[in-house]
Length: 255
Image (cartoon, rainbow, N blue to C red; front, side, top):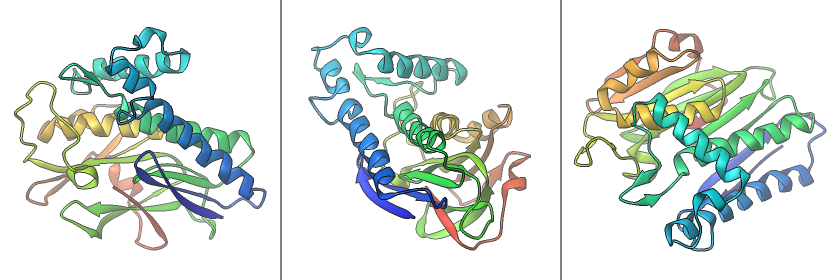
């Protein structure tokens, strides 16, 4: 069963092969994403993020879940030498953590309900488990950052996460915290495969902000593989990334 609905400003797709999955299960997952959007959207004055930015709420008073997100953001800032930062120009925006975290939480909900074969895709970032309808690993296509109608690489995953950061998904929404004048004209996209979509998403964001150094940063991370496309269309990948490359058929799309 497969459904796509629009939440958090993006299409979200859930596909589950297991026969036990039901329409009520779809509602549970999509309602969860709607609730995350209500709490963490930086574009809603009534959200926790909106109230923090307006001065109505201190982050420390925003609940236990928010503290978890803040800890993850601070950990990522430290792990990336400051290239991942949820604060910009005095504004608080945890979207770079919340997206991957929410996808992972939704995938965990499916696993807790006994599902074995599924993927959860939010805006091209995915958590996958098991196999597709044909009993094969999930095949995921990486979009060409210069022509999103084209797939430039296909990977096969059975358990883990994949995320792509680039300017073609939502325009210029990533910045270099060490150089606010950075034009981001060296790297077009960075795709990361990790043990979870949370790890893939947060490190893809940081690696993209690093520019041409991002792929070397990814190379040094245990359990993380990356694929970067520069402004000339030249692709560079980490050493173990080729083990995930698959033939192009029956694919979902990342990016």
